[in-house]
Image (cartoon, rainbow, N blue to C red; front, top):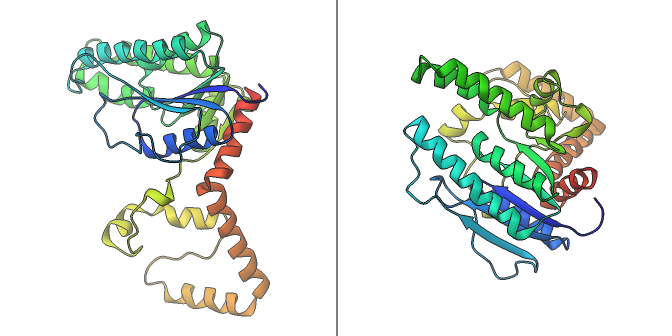
Length: 284
């Protein structure tokens, strides 16, 4: 796939960073339709047209006929199939060259992916979670008689759709061995971690109770990217040793700082993220 193309970016949930990506792709000259479910109750991103939005960019909500039913499996499944047909109608209307889909329930995705194939669009499965694993834990408890058979069906469905996708964008490297073990070719998987639109976020002090209990991943990020030293609270000897090492080695200070800047650029700069998604679309 080369040149400027028509892209249907489908984000079932309507979260902030997906629509930021849609705007970025449109700024590059692609024609982009961003579609989301207005019926699914979850916090939404910036889903109204803004001054300065690029030409060739549009936002289209789709809806269920009735209020979305989260409570019961069978009612929810019917509505997820219904909204899948609403997404499929967007494919028929827009006739994209490529579809990028994420956050869609498996029954929604099944209908949607078939529509993309029917109209000749490349399909990029943006994998936020392996839904069939959660289904396998929950459904057998709720439906003791049929639950295990239902869970097996969804495992089959999910990995069949992944294998038939033209490309997969996984949000973590941890998904890659799971996918390849199920027969997905590794050269069709790209890892692009989720991000946040920094200009839309309120700014608060980093040191707070919530961060202390909910952000242990910060240590892994620093270590994995060789961007500094880490230690547990109260490890004074570790802190003093790190400070002495940094004070004595200016080249190390520069290298760690450069690595931290490179991580931030790769992870949060929408231009860099847009480049990586364009590379995925190019290879689809």
